[in-house]
Length: 505
Image (tube, rainbow, N blue to C red; front, side, top):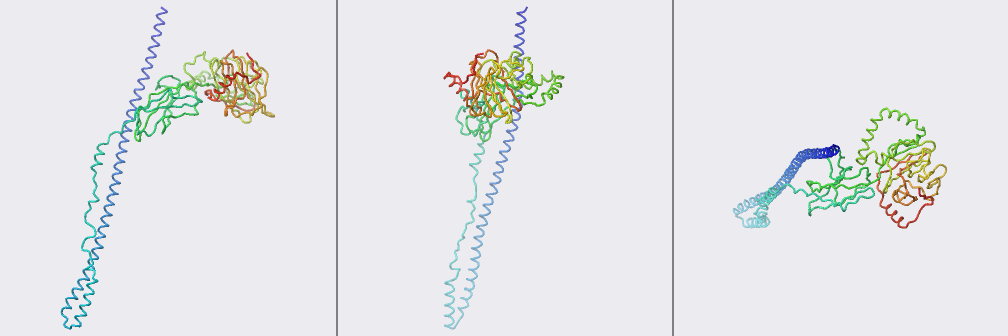
């Protein structure tokens, strides 16, 4: 009976998974239908705009060419009118001479006749009528102002829909995920000189494989990329994966998206565990601040929260579900890290991270307020007592900065301290290689090594922070920087120790 029940349960699980898959596919189909309708309307609107633009250009050209014809008409008419005026004046002068010559024929006196003859002869010699061109200066033809749209008509009749660019192909092997940046490379399946630019879309997800419609974040867009490679920088890796896709665009139309690629964005993500913090500390996500009220304000808030603790936990879990990895069980590092423990008390102004380190390499950064009087950062086992301070037990390792009277910078472990004779950076990077038993601190800006502890970690580690009079901000969701990896490789290759406080626990 138990065997049949187990088999039936597997069938039920399979059917539930398949139904969920079909539901997702139906949602995708409905979403695609809506997109087809919207994109069709956009295409018609674009067609209207193109033709309206063409009509506008033709109308503008018609006005310009008509104006040119009118100017040519005015020029020719003016030239002919000037010539007509000259002819009228010449004709008037010629008629006067003709009348004078006819009258002279009637003169009887030889002397008078000779004088009249000489005057008329001289006048005829200079008369404009005999120097006038009797050919129009301009022709009446306007054929040079005619247009032939035969070629243009054939071109317009040959207008077709612009070829849609083919979908690019993302080269997954050439893509690089490092230093909280993602470099994406792609290529076109064939050469297309009409490609104007590319559009890259990406979104964070906790699901491996193809993108899903339900429960996914919206796509972020990077537009007008001219090259076939792009680097997304300054990312916070608060999910396990990133979906990426690319489309090619010409001057008028965008092509289909490439097949999406899912890249793993492995990084160490945690928040500060307010349930562990000293009452004098005010904690919010990844920020902790000294609270001079002694936690009295927080006690009031906690009292209100306890009344609705169930709702509070639901809301908190819902917020985390957007960024945390899926299928986080009660046995996960974060769940086990939260385990029940007393708050820190006395002079141990400490708060722990909410995610345990049990293997692998991890990195996070810390920035202190400029007026912070005293603070420590490092790692510890869960067994750190509520009155214990970081670095003063054999189960905790840290560096400590004291700005009370003069600045001191030291590495601490098992109640021993080593002074670090170097300037205190604005940001400090913490690198933990659990498997190699290595804890290193770096100048987060220059990646210069500040100090390294070497030991053998025998229990899960929790990030720990101690603050007095001030506040610190912790940056998580970071990958191990490439520069740190290189330094660690070189340091491990040399096999040298950088600390006299190393202790095998």
